[in-house]
Length: 88
Image (cartoon, rainbow, N blue to C red):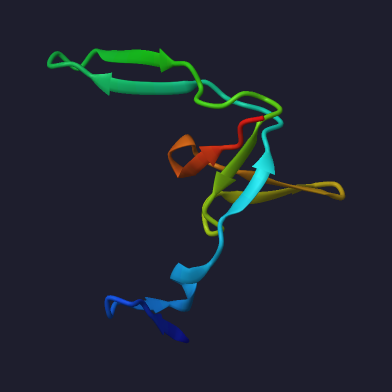
């Protein structure tokens, strides 16, 4: 791997230099957290999604799972992999 050195002397591998990607949100699932209590009963907490359909989001190039449906390609990205949202 080709490396670049920062002004402070840190060596950055080529993969760390990749620019983030962006995409338009076409669907959002609910954000759900499930955990067992001390008696083993599972508690579910549902949170509002941090993004909405139609927004443009920024994410790391390596994040997500690519999915192809017919001739269209999509990328499934976890909320935790999102870096930001473009505001209009």
